[in-house]
Structure formats: structure tokens, C-alpha cells
Length: 139
Length: 424
Image 1 (cartoon, rainbow over the protein chains, first blue to last red):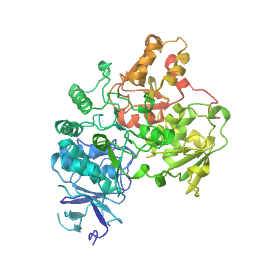
Image 2 (cartoon, helix red, strand yellow; image 1 turned 180 degrees about the vertical axis):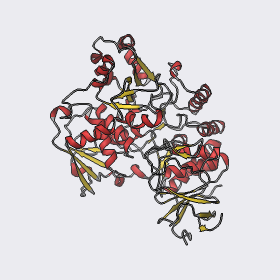
Image 3 (cartoon, each protein chain N blue to C red; image 1 turned 135 degrees about the vertical axis):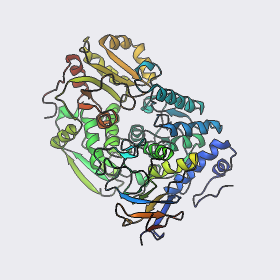
């Protein structure tokens, strides 16, 4: 079972359920994600054009600008953000965006750091609990 | 009392968490502690100054956060400068965006001034009269300022950015992690500049291109550049760092014999072997240069200089290039700079000359972060790797990268002009 809890760090605690969307390359949210629509707008990114809203995003990490924190927090405020983000590499900029949205708006979008790739496939239903445990199954 | 983490907090840090410095101090420290915990810092350290990037409008959340801090009685604890915003307050007519967004962006600027930050509105705070010194811990945001402070000055800042920058300024504290720690400042990847002509080594245009190449190829590692002539002026190092911090996540580079932590290659590597070495010659430099141009066949509509903000020395080079000429009809020329530089330019009598030539000075902001360009289609020429890297995505324009001389001559001619042989 992926994410039984031992090698997952909770960067922002929360509960979420949704279908997985795996990003195959790092994504800078600043310049790469449209907070108004939740779509990936970085033309150089392999998942360009897809919508992250309500999905459990599995991604290596961010890239580039620290303003990505703001874009993520803005997307959380607008309700266009992912349901959760599972990182496979540490990324304080993404974690900070979630921390700020929790502080300002009381919306806790979970961000997890998985020690190893969680083995999720795009389209798979996933549930995340406050302790950071992940389970597959109908949403 | 709020629970601390494994992190060791000082009495002052705990006082902030307990609200003895007001609600803003409590919120700022709570966020710092969260981030220190994520980076596994063992403690927080004092910082001597801060530079804030959060004053640039990215949406309502920017303003909600800043106004929460103002309402919470926030006041910066250390000298704090402000990065570019979305508006040029001296030339407000240049803003071509949605007026409501403009009003919100103005409110955001006011909020940061209310927190006690200095309204410097520049991405090049290292060009201000007072700047950090070697070895000093600071909390700077804005990628080009970070890489300049770490590399050229030898001050120590991690990659701070939105939200966390003002938290550090309000508390005077930052996590003891990342580039504050000596071990993390070790050079790891060596770029050996070889076979580059003496003319190109002496040209400004080499440096942004080299920075772009280094940023693309160094990954998350600290690069060391070997083979540059001694005495490289600060403006070239500024352009190098800005290019590297745009195409990659470079927050520190060493240039052997030039930057303060690299008197020798061995010193830059902390006496250890590099992870890898990469040769940089004319061919790879031309390839890097070409990556910065998206189109040069279409019509030229504008030229943008001054990313990062133009220094006084750069104005000194610009003036003779204009050669009493006038920008060709239909071409807009913008030079981004800081207010304090503008005053110097005015004092030397250059402002009138620039205006007569048809050059528009832009202060407080930059042409790639906010809607200023008058013409949508066509090609914009720039001498900045950073501008060339971000503008196509941000503004939807095509870019032709060139030297300052190529940019200015092109503006005067009304079509793209190239200095043949420059890159041989």
C-alpha cells in the first residue's frame, strides 16, 4: 500500500480525496499555472493544458520562482487548486503556499513529501488523511 | 503558548509566538517556525537586513496577507527595502492593465510601506548606497538580488520569496539553513570557459548568455565559473547572475579570481573534487544565445533594457550609443531603473537627452512583470537574458536577444541590426 505513513512527511496537514494526476516534470506555478482556471499554462510542460482543480497532484517538485507560493495560495483561495499535492522532492515554496492559505483562509490543502514515489497512476482514486496516510479506493 | 518543534527557539522567538510583539509578530514567527522545521534548521539566526518581493501583485492573496500584517500591528525589525511593484508611481500613465488591478496593486504597495519598509521599488537593492557586507546574514527575496548578494558581495541569504521575506523582516530572524550555512556554499559543478575570443570576453553580452547557459546546466548545484578575465565589472556579474537565476534555480555562483569566496578554484570547491566539469566554448555559447531569441524575422516594435534595473554605469554606456540620434518611428524604447538612479541621471543632464531621443524611463517596476508595452505584436529586443526568458510567457511577445549596442542601433534604425563577428 503506498504511503502507509512511515516514509511520508506531512508538510501541510489536511484531508482530501480525488483522482491522481501525475506530473512527469517539475512545474513552476508562477508562469505555469493559471490560478483563475486551475490549468497548466507552461507550454514547455508535458502536462500543459490539463486542469489540476480537485486532483491529487503527484509531482517531483516546483521549479524557479518563489512567487509560486502566491500562485498556489491564490488558487486555493479561488477554489481552483488541487485537492492535495504529493511531492517526491522537498519543495518549501509549494509547502509555503499551502501554509499561507491555511493561515489566511482556514483551508487546509494537504501537502505531503513522499520518501519514494507513491506508485500512483493518473486517474486512480486516492484518499489522504490528516496523518499523511494515503489509500487507494473509490472517492 | 504554541508548541515549538525540535527546532531550538530563543526567548525572543518564543515571545513572538506568544504574541508579545502583537498579532503580526505572532503570525510571522509561526510561519518562520513552520518553514524552519521543513528545512530541518536547528535554530533561527539574526538577519541584518531584508529585501521584500511580496509587494508585487500576484492576486488577492498578496493583499490579504499584507493587510493582515498591517492590522496586526506589524513593523519591520531590520532595515528593509522593497522590490519592484506592478506600477510606476512616477509615470502612472504607463500602466496599461485593468484599472481595478492597478488600484489593488497600489494598496499592496501602501501596505508594505505601512509596515516600515523603504519605498525603494527596485530589483537591484545592491545598487543602493548602503548594502550588505561580506559574511553578513540577510533575508533577501528576488532571485537576481539573492544571487548577487551571495555571489558578488559574499553576504549570506537563502532563497527567500513571497510571504517568508516579510516574516523575516518583521522578526529580524531567519532559519539557519540553506546558504546561511558554510557547507552549502561549496562550489559543485565547474564550468571551464575555454577558447572564447578576447573580444567576446571583454563584451558585456557574453555575461547574460553565460549565466543562461550555467542556469540551464547546473541543476540544483552551486556552479563555479573558471576562465573569466579578472576585474569583471559588477554589471556583468549582475547580468550573469540574473540569467542563471532565471533559467535555473541558481542562488550562488563562484567566479574564480573574481568573486570573494573564490580566490582560487580549490577555495571555491572547499578543497574537494567537483561533482562534474563542463567545458564552455564558442559553440555552446552561441547555442545558449540562440535559445534567448524566439524570432527575429518579424518587425521590431520595441526595445527593453534594464532587467535587472539599469545602473548608473550602464547609463554611462548607453549615452554615447545614442549618438544624438532619435529612436525610429514606430519603435518604443524602455529603460527600467530605480528612482535613485533616475535622480542621478537627471542630475547629469542625461534625462533630457534620453527623452529627446524618444527613450522612456520606467521606474518602480519592470516591463516584463506588468502591462506597460504599448504594442502587442512584433518583436521586442533586449540585452537581458532574464527578460528574454520570462517575457514570451508573461507577455506573449517574441524576443530577440542582443548586446546593448545591437539593441540601441536597432532602435535607431527601426529594424534588427546585428554586430557580425561578435560571437566568432
